[in-house]
Length: 388
Image (cartoon, rainbow, N blue to C red; front, side, top):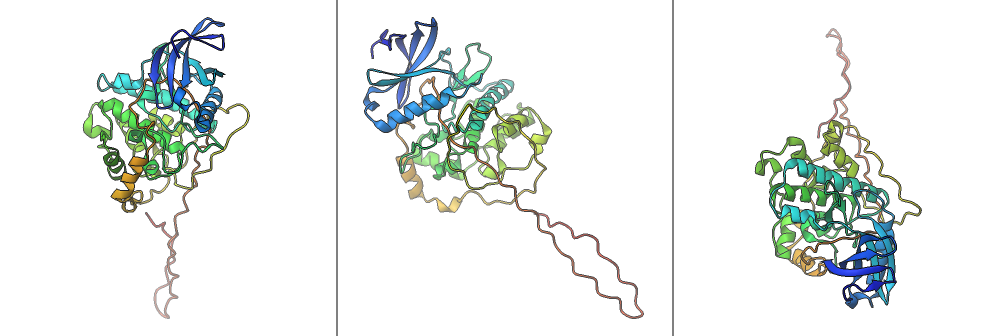
């Protein structure tokens, strides 16, 4: 498509703002409302693929349901001479990746960025939408320059659509959780894990897992944990450092239960910081919610729970051959270098956590009856709870 072509006699298309594996984003102008827009166009080579067209359409419909100041707004969707397009809010174009490229960010700025991202994700998750590709390149600076917006829900999980083909896991591996690398379905926790990795990268000015080789990167994610924030950057306040360290813990039960939980802890809410870890249960099937998206529910702190000793995430089950095979099976479009995106979304149910089983009570033996002529038997108090 050439510059300044008109889409459906309404949108004037100009220069390229960014390119991705599935689409490119062009600068545009809405001639009816006289405002700048961004126009996302499916690549011409992919327009004949019905599965990809369906994914693109799902993105537009689901993203249009998400209305929040920290999510890029979708204005319109259509088809122009066989090419699907999405019309989006036009932003300046700078991403969090651009900011990180200039060096480590001030801790206060990182805290503000993470709060914006979590606010947007909280709304998406409440509406049944998982992003599945949170990374600095998909976090855009708002037009006012004082906040961030989550963009590019292009591979968001959509109920009823098998967007992940057999043997493939879509997303950017550098920001995947160990469970996703091992092949588990996407969950709310995976989006939050990626938020933690972004915070780590923003503070240090480099990725937590810098490996370029897919097989080496998969091994690093599965077998290692980044150094604690405080060990690398001593000027970061303990609360921010602790939130990021907890968000990227290798063991999922040590992470946050929801975006609201993580956001409350980030704000210094001691109840959220002390709240027990989430339990690991079956990940629910994806579903599509009808009607308007519901607002994100506030985080309700739970009583502190007994920590459960864990031993990693199937560390011995993943062989070198399996990881290498996974790395080669990654969607090539998803492994490409980060574009400068402006985009959208699609629905999947947030994970729920089951409460841990109650602590067992150790029963003390009944007292022996006193022997004739001996001292009176002494009664026993309540059984002590066995400590884990």
